[in-house]
Image 1 (cartoon, rainbow, N blue to C red):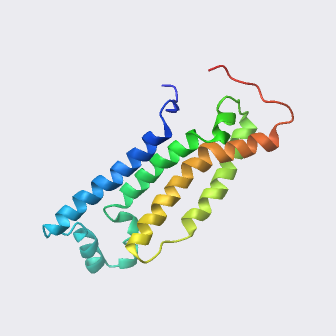
Image 2 (image 1 turned 180 degrees about the horizontal axis):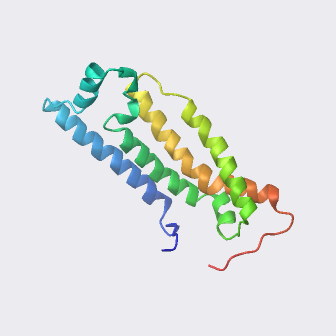
Length: 161
């Protein structure tokens, strides 16, 4: 199975997909909340009964994965439509350049995980969304572009589409 990046989609597709995920889940959440259902019941029980409540992370909240996935969808669209990706897309990266991309990406993405989380749940969701929007932009577009720019002595070979 060959890797395939959906570059034929418009940026608005990614933005609308992200928005639809967020709005749809918010509508369901507020509807259930209005009906008296607590969707965070498992977090409350885990925090209460867990031997070590500090092990219950905010990542395990019901909408953490949704904010992560919708941010990644938007980030993918931004990355695929960036000028950096347009240059990198047709270039061939050698093994050394791929290793440099890996090291640089891990060096940039690691500190994002070490930042920690804000105590307010709404700020956590916003931070989580922005963090996972940034990841595809870094990994797909910015890091390979930087490596290609600083490592190319001559013009890199162009792959045929």
